[in-house]
Image (cartoon, rainbow, N blue to C red; front, side):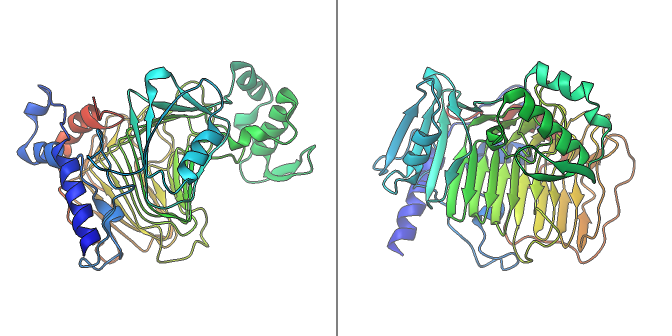
Length: 419
């Protein structure tokens, strides 16, 4: 009880020091949306606060390292500030996080970008990672124009994504034709037979609980089909809150949640790709295969923005209850936005699909999908049909009118905190 009271006090303090930015645009929003902006931008919510997929009385106090805002609460122990040294900082960041004494790791961007040569592993529980001063963490390797030209010259976009592969010079067998030839060309161009570039990602949250990541800009090498790392991957991660982050150009996915991860919230984040990306702009995967164990992967995606060149998986989900709430879709001509798959239950409400988005939904083998009537699709007068048992979630939340979502999300999603 003493620990719960202490954590509650810290969380109340964290909320009291948060000052949200407002604008003339905000003043045009409904009272409900203003309530969300003023009260709920700095409060964990959704599945990261749950301990059950259905029991509303079974909650979890997610605290990370003891606070989740900046400046940190007075008396918070284990606060470490990192600044860029201009070199590969993978080992430095990883060792800092691994040390159990370091509970709150602050990435201070005042001295430039943090560079990492491969994913930083997070496997120690009870951590908060915060970005300040426009902190960016960037992969060391990235696709070049010369590489993309070589891939185009080889006809990669017209190759099969299901069969026709072969064995690479390093002895690796690749099933898919496009991936096989992509990897072969990159091996030849980089001279890297070990394909170290496939590890170009930022964070890998693995088999731990109570992790908070906020207000960071995460920049990848560009999307390309090499079976590589994600910008952020959750594998066996439980009760994690990824909030107010910007995801750009993930090699494989931007933020993927797999391998029996559970009770995850992704909120107020932006996802996009630039001209650095080549193909495979598949943004957010929940569940890596149809054989994922059931009962896990319960996830909330709320108040996020999928924008430039996001093609698929916004999100695609298997197995879990997936709550897709008040997100904004402005990605021109996507292949597929929301995609319920094997054994999934989706609750879709209050989202806004902008003009030009016709491929906003498809499903295959989902258990149930609930499309609330408060979604807005600019290119359609009718919503997809709900089916199965009505999907509900075990936590309270506020739903903004869909008409407010573009303004609210454009203004406040991304690394917009602590200014």
